[in-house]
Length: 195
Image 1 (cartoon, rainbow, N blue to C red):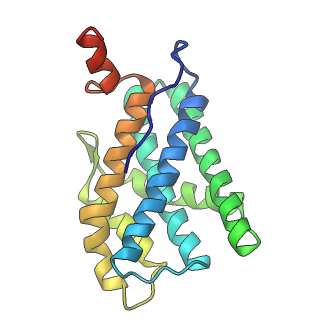
Image 2: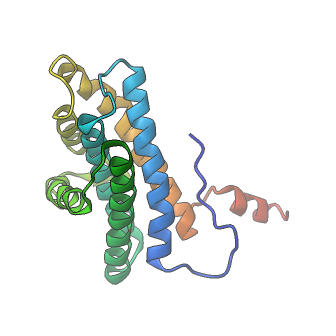
Image 3: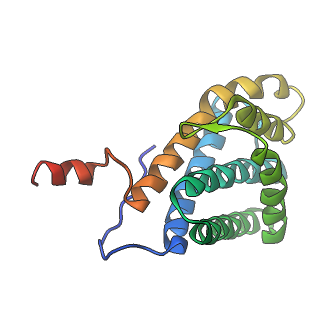
């Protein structure tokens, strides 16, 4: 999936909230792509409450990922502002889409899920910019709650080996790019070559 993670206009440092909103759009696309991949792998996720439950669960995981990246690169005040704005933007996107399709959605329920899951994810390891095996296992278990019984035995393989690590790495890179910290960004490489 192609991710846009550079600012159109370079006008100096961006506030954490602006970075969070841009990163949240990427996270939304990543969660939708993971859901699409799961459906393509024959997991039963028809549009409905189960679909949006799965989506909310994956987004809560990405909130935890974004917070870990922010913790590594922002001071405490900026990190809190970033994570709060990130979760709020995702709650807005989730509510809008759920309301459009199902007639109602709840931002507060989404934020509550993020807070609850965040407590669990906080107990899981993070090393070298990647979620640990227990971190990914928690994600798979939480997602399994939104799948029919026939799919639950297989969710761990798909999520822990493919969907979770790919989404976490893509989001991490996008946030680093937005912060201007990605060492291998195309823009940085072009500047280094004198373009």
